[in-house]
Amino acid sequence: MYSRETTTQGSYDPAALVEQINNTILPGISHRNGFRGINVSGDPSTGTAWILTNWDTVEDLVASRQDADQLRRQATQALGGTVLGVREWDLPVVHVSDRPPTPGLPINVNRHFYDPTQLHEVVSFFAWVAEPMYRSSPGYRSVRMLVDRTTGEVLVGSVWDDEASLEEGFSRLEPIRDRAVEKGMKFVERTRREVIFYLAQ
Image (cartoon, rainbow, N blue to C red; front, top):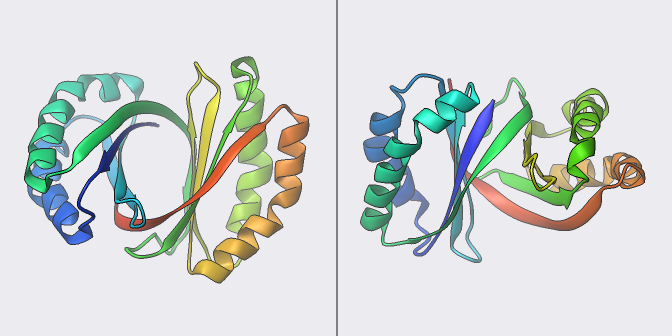
C-alpha cells in the first residue's frame, strides 16, 4: 500500500478535526478507487496533527492528489491551522491486531535512515523478524512501516494499550534495533503521539 501524510499545526482540537474528517475529507475522497482508510494522530504538546490516507497502489495515490489538495485547503481553512508539509510514502508493512486502535491510545514513532539501496533487505527483515515481535508483545494494537525509497527515511509507528505496554514493547524490541544498526540504520529520533481517528477499509 501507499500513504499520503499531511502534517498540520495550529489549534489542537481533536473533536473539530474528527468533525472535518467525517464531514469534509471522507465524503470527498472515500469514493476514489483504491482508498483504504485514514489514520490521524496528534501531539497535544505541540499542537501538531498527522493525517494519513492509505491507498492500494501508487497509481491510486497519484490519481487522488487533486482531490486531496482541494480537501486539504477546505479543512485547514475551517480549522484555522497551518499545513506544515505533505509527503507520500510507500507502506510495505502494516498490521492491525484483532483490537484496532481507538482514540486516545499512545503511539510510539521511531524515525531513522538507511542506504536507499538496502531498503529491500530492510523491509524484508522488518516483516519477518520485527513485526512478529510486535504482534506477540502485551498491549500491542498495530504497527506500520512508512518508507521513502528515495531518501532512505523510515518511520515505524506502533499503537499500544497504554504507556506501560508501550515502554515494555520499546524495551523488548531493543535487540531488533541493535541488529538494524548493524545493517546500517541511523537512528534519528523517537517521538510520541496519540490516536485521534482510525478507519480502515
